[in-house]
Every structure is written in structure tokens, then in C-alpha cells.
Length: 153
Image 1 (cartoon, rainbow, N blue to C red):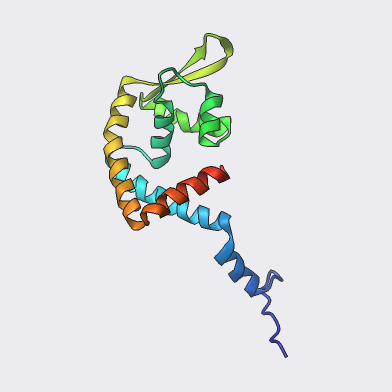
Image 2 (image 1 turned 60 degrees about the horizontal axis):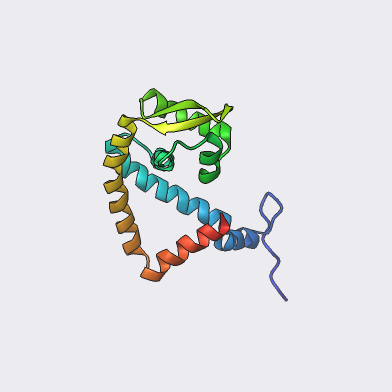
């Protein structure tokens, strides 16, 4: 006779909780993202930015200023969130927003000279942390992980 499933106060068997913990891609990705973000945030602290700000500034490092919509799409965030994330960078003088001359309703985002300088100082830190993380993975593991994440996004 099989043992009855232990049921939690939520009414879901505990075994289901264990299964989700061990198999849920969303949970695994969230946990890994938080851990990576903390590691990069700590490393980037000396240049006064977070991992999210680094990604945002790097997304602006283009030959021509991108639109808010293009940056939001690249970073997989909505325009409202992007606008909120741009405000502290604009207050620090790292980015500027201008009217798109081709579509006066649109806005273009540019790195300022100060933004390019802080980004330049952050890149070696980013490279160092990536080397450390890549050493934790097999050579094929990092490539496979990046490919899998790109496929999902």
C-alpha cells in the first residue's frame, strides 16, 4: 500500500513542491539571475553602477542613438520601466533623451561623455567577472547556457 501524499496548508502535496523546486525553469532562471546580478552589482559598485545600469548603458553604446522602444525591446522591459531606470542615469549626467527628428513623438537616448567614461571603466570589471563565472562552467557549458537563454528570449 502506498503512503498518502503529505499535503501542505495550501492543499498542494509537498512532493509537488519538491518537483517544482527541482524542475521549474522559471525558478532556476530567477535564482540564477538574482545571484548573478548580486555578483555583478558588487563588482560594479566601485564605478557607481548596478548590473542593470551597466546593461542599459551598454545598450546605448551604438553608432546612432536608439529609440526608447528599441532599447526597451532589447532589454525585454516595458517603456515605463525603462523610463524609470533612465531617470537616475540622467540625473547623474550619464544619458540624455532628445526628440527623434524623424518622428517628433519619439525619443532617442544617448550616452553623454560622462556616460561613455563610466561605461569604459566598467567594461574591464564586467570582463573579469565573466572570466570568473566562465571558469565555473565547462567550456561547452557556458556556450550551451547562452544559446539556451537566447532561444528562450
